[in-house]
Image 1 (cartoon, rainbow, N blue to C red):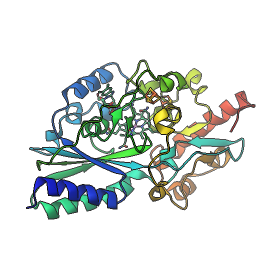
Image 2 (image 1 turned 90 degrees about the horizontal axis):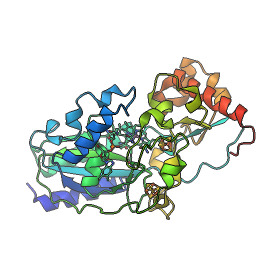
Image 3 (image 1 turned 30 degrees about the horizontal axis):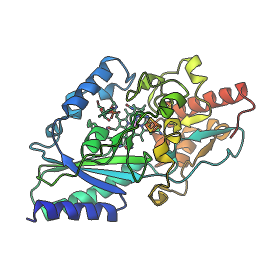
Image 4 (image 1 turned 180 degrees about the vertical axis):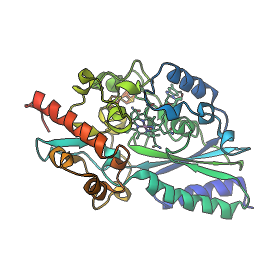
Length: 322
Ligand code: B12
Ligand code: SF4
Ligand code: SF4
């Protein structure tokens, strides 16, 4: 078996070759402080309908629950940044969060993670290994921050120095002892732009997001109808929301990532969706049109709900800009 340092270097090289934009290694320890923060967050009911977050809560900050004897975490970031949305093509257009303009990242990164795990198997036969991409109970941002992949901003995003926060994350856990990278001690300083810009006031304070006030939660996760006074603040967002990232100075520097072509797809959603056309779709045509895009998570019924809210907001605000 190769040395730990050789394995670490080979894994990082392979991750970058597969299209990840950054890769760091951290210890697979129990993240006590993050765990406490997470349990308090749940205790305050900030998760709303997302009961899956409360199930198996302890496993979210204890990696050994996933890989017995876990020693190291490989934290990976993939940039999906592809510039700005540009002007709305029509007054009926609904706005889509950047990470969802192209193909669904879960499958895309899942395939790359499979290759990375195979590489690890070749380098260290018999090593225990498991990968995560938003699908299992693990605090991905907390483990990524511990590995030095970035620091946590007041908007709760993991901010990477080269890539900003326009990234999706993936994690590989292993029982191999690998040399760890330095933590990124960056911070937000006195900036509060994201806290002030959130259209729905979803930040009760810095570093805490109340999902039950967040447009992303209401347009992607929630099955219930949002309270009308809150929905009136959603503007034209029909899937997710990027406001607290758009204002962030760390996202305004020239970002060091190729336009996320790997997320592009011929029949993807793109930055704008025609809300009238969306409301006219039946189940079969919705499935055909948005297959393999992140829209399959909420599905037709909830996307139609979102479209109706965006149209009502447009009617209330006829002078809005695209
Ligand atoms: C539930 C969830 C949501 C919920 C709740 C979000 C939230 N802020 O909690 C909703 C639906 C609102 C949501 C929205 C979005 N999400 Co989301 N979401 C998740 C999920 C599944 C769990 C997050 C969670 O556990 N939240 C509970 C809180 C308490 O935990 P946390 O935010 O992770 O914070 C932990 C650490 O960061 C740390 N921490 C937090 N604050 C501080 C402060 C300090 C000082 C320190 C030291 C540490 C620290 O402690 C916390 C644990 O207690 C993760 C995937 C995963 N399994 O981790 C994706 C994830 C966080 N989401 C992601 C994305 C892309 C988004 C959106 C940008 C999508 C969009 N455009 O609409 C928005 C961003 C909104 C925002 N500002 O966070 C990415 C984030 C990538 C990144 N670079 O940070 C993730 C990691 C998915 C992935 N694999 O890429 N999401
Ligand atoms: S995603 Fe939008 S609604 Fe949610 S916290 Fe950020 S700015 Fe507020
Ligand atoms: S906008 Fe300012 S406060 Fe918010 S995450 Fe970015 S640097 Fe931090």
